[in-house]
Amino acid sequence: MRSGSLILLAFIILTAFKANAQPGFKGGAAALDRYLTDHIVYPEYARQNCISAIIKVKFRLDSVGNVKDAVVLDGPGIDLDDEAIRVMKMTSGKWQLPPDYNTNSNIVLPIRFVPDNARCTNATSAGIAAAIANYQSRQELQNAVTNYYKNKYTGAADTTKEAQIIILKKQLGYNDDFIADVLDQASKKLKQGDKDGACEDWNFIRNIGSDKADGFIAKYCLR
Image (cartoon, rainbow, N blue to C red; front, side):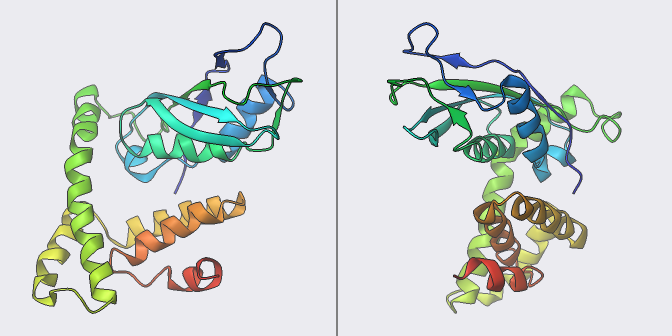
């Protein structure tokens, strides 16, 4: 999967800090920008639908600079939100803290996601808005598919419904090309050191009825 471009709004809003006592990313704002740009994996639904967004992530830093309690304050409510939190957590340990840092302080980081303009020249505002609105109903269909296969693997599924599930998979676009894109997404996360994120993608592939990630799950996710 090709990731879209990302532009970081390179400023941090800090609350409950004294003047000149703010934490900073090691190497400064430019280094933070580069880190996020290098580690963002543009999520598949947003990529396919050319969705852009500014997502504000709130988090705290513990005494050694690890990211804690990361949540989305403002976002479109789609897969971009999850990716913003994932990459923010990956900055753990890369922050410099001032003396007597208050670990109860909140940091808000706005990140702008911009999809690949080369493949999104024909995207329309109406189409993008419809895709965002459709995300929740799509999630319900996705849950029906993944719950079926989770139950099937444990022998608890009503297999007479599998034909309906296959229809849902086609409706959702869960074909070989889609699976290849998710495998590529997982590979990028693994190379970044995010094994948990990669395992989440591989297990998703398994839970839509494909065995194409089983080798990766056995190697990386069952320990």
